[in-house]
Amino acid sequence: MLRLTSHEARALAAVRDPHEFPAAIAASRDARDRLSTADEPGVFHFSRGKAAYYASEAYCAMGEADDLREATRQAQQAIQFLTADPSASGAELLAAARIDLAAAHLASGEVDGFADELDPVLSIAPEHRTVPVIQRVRRIGDELAPHAHGRLALELRERIDLFTAHRAVPPSRPALPE
Image (cartoon, rainbow, N blue to C red; front, side, top):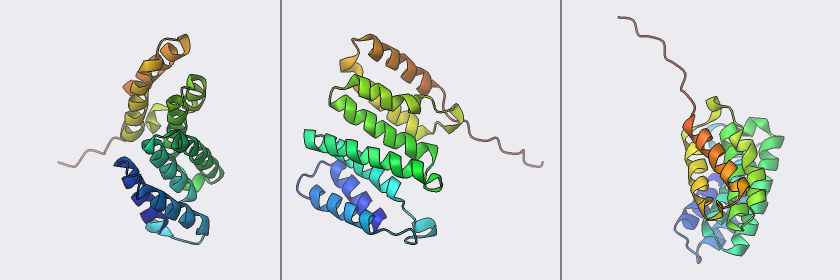
């Protein structure tokens, strides 16, 4: 249920549906609050951290000031959940939550907060830089453009360019016998 409601809220936010989104995000948060550690094992498992990250992404997509404040809270909660339970987290999920938190700061005009949250993402080793993370960093870097007049913004732009130039390399496959 948590996976389904989280995806529904995310989809409604992507099309910015102000009528259906509130009910969908509330259902997602209710499902997350009811989740026990024994729920949804195996391939059906959907962690609280991932659900909070999806919620932060959805609120960011809605884009209103109240939504951005809630996106910040949800991203902070996602980071807490994902950090507390390494088995439910991967570098990509944690990076995505931090990118959402950075995006909320940037949308609010807080370049320093943006830099603080993006710094751990830009420090990820190249072998953990998945295509989705690189795409999201590139996209958020484009959103930095209106703020690119200060020294910090210029430094961030350089770091983002360097980060996106070096993506994860898939492990090499053994040669097939001839």
